[in-house]
Length: 278
Ligand SMILES: NC(=O)c1ccc[n+]([C@@H]2O[C@H](COP(=O)([O-])OP(=O)(O)OC[C@H]3O[C@@H](n4cnc5c(N)ncnc54)[C@H](OP(=O)(O)O)[C@@H]3O)[C@@H](O)[C@H]2O)c1
Image (cartoon, rainbow, N blue to C red; front, top):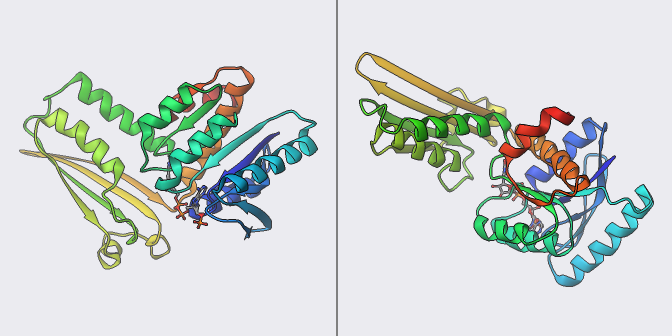
């Protein structure tokens, strides 16, 4: 049985908790977590003891973690951390996991990814760091990147428009839209504009179901030429697809840990191997 602890108990932490609670087959969620403050938090049936970011809090967390793991598995350390925290906490948490040899999955975005990668590569643990854990999006992006690298300029006659819609609270432009834009610019050798929609009234008109106005990720990639038009659409409702990807990544990290194959891994590495043990 793989034991998982959460680092970040916000919206994504909640979704991961619910997913594990629904499928208690091979993953056990520990009732201790890292968070932005010391508190007890109830998610579903689970009461989580959360530890803040101060060094003393982190030491108490480690002591508790050792006790928990001893109790659950006689000292057999099958533990993976799943981090969905904040951009400000990302790098600090990567350092904490590396220094304390805790294999981890990091879904948090908006921190220095290159520095995080260096820390993992200098450590003795395996880790997956992935700004997008939805496996279909990861592979579709990979396919478009492949086309762009193989056939730069092949679609010079096409004009591209990108439109993305997310919940009102999202302030920045979608990372997925920016990533795919760079590939489409390579294919068309044209500048591509991204239109971001955050207005719930317009989202309603675009067909976003009311219950997902507060949590959705829609992307339209439109390629238009004379007498031809191609549209690639990604539609994600809620946060479940990312939570599912994070559990696949946690299983992968656990296997790598058992095989003594430390290192920095991405979601594509997970997807290449997941079929072997899932
Ligand atoms: N990779 C993906 O596929 C994917 C998918 C969705 C979201 N994300 C990313 O995941 C992150 C979290 O998203 P969310 O929607 O869950 O955000 P959220 O609801 O704001 O939750 C963030 C959580 O992090 C906690 N936190 C603050 N400082 C921390 C620290 N030092 N260590 C551990 N936890 C800390 C916060 O606790 P307090 O409330 O106590 O401060 C809060 O519980 C964001 O960066 C988001 O962009 C990635």
